[in-house]
Image (tube, rainbow, N blue to C red; front, side, top):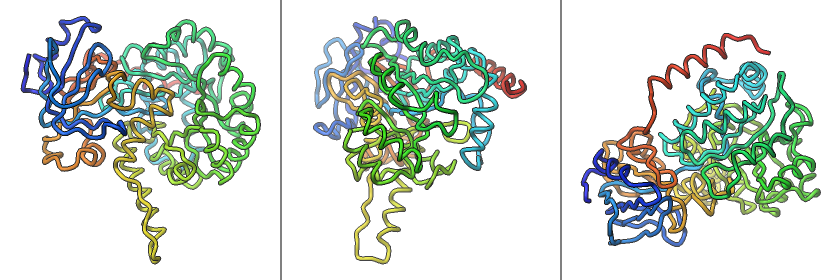
Length: 463
């Protein structure tokens, strides 16, 4: 079946008539930004999805019995990968857009609002964040869920990810402040057995923790004991609040203790010492940058540490962090990092005979896709449009008013596009956004739930 309209209702109807495991979709005539180093960018290319997997990329592929989507005038891109977001906070979006510092965020949100969250508030916030991620082209989201007050709170956060159909990473941590059941990290065994029994599923599990005991005490700080918990469970570790002298000293201890590895992600990594960076590079530790968070909240130097990461051979992933004060989408992160690094590079070379060492749009798209997947431990499954990987992809309209004419596809994705240009999102081969709309969401009902949850949280005294 050939349909000229890239993401028409007729195509969706055809797709949904077929069982997911038997479905075949052929996108034709697209500019394919594969982000696979061996495949590069393919002009006027085709891409075949069979079931949940990309099976072929190239020119003039045979359609067979596939539903054919004419993607002429569109860019196919891997879905973006968010390596760190506190999704439960979504109903508090932009409640403090001009946050002064980390202390202001911690005391208002973690010591205040978080303490009154019920399991249903965890579900609503996490679901809202995940649906918004899909709408803006994020197909994989690591939810750093640091408000697990009870088993039910953890279950609600995981079920929200499951119900949206996003490729979700549930990174579980106990709360910073207030009353809670102290079930974490012991409850992770139950959580894994109940929700993460298969290695071939949309959801994966990680241990979430903090770099030091400065904010919330020693129980939440990474060290040999929590490293053993993760090792026993066979899961990765995401470490938040990694910045400054104390974190640098902690990193050197972790390196000495042998608990740094590619399975450990350090988040922010702002204002670290050269010695700490060397230890991270030597151990293959991954890094999740939060470009707008560092600058907006003013974490240490307030400068995203991309140059420091690259200097030791680490290509970082990118992340959203806290929607209470920041934007929700990956386009903002890519553009902020691109502008900040290039500003620093030109400024450093100004008045000298040196050439600025600038990152490119390809670099930041790589960070937002393939390197994000690697950071989340999912590079074998997603992050590039490589045959054999899962079909997590975007259809971006290159002939829309704000994008036409198409001159450079990567530049168009990074610097020109936004959520309105994403006409379709596939996660694991399943359409989650089509014809510009997120599918299977009762927006009116969701709006009522979000508003009711917000009113409860804002009007209930902190515990």
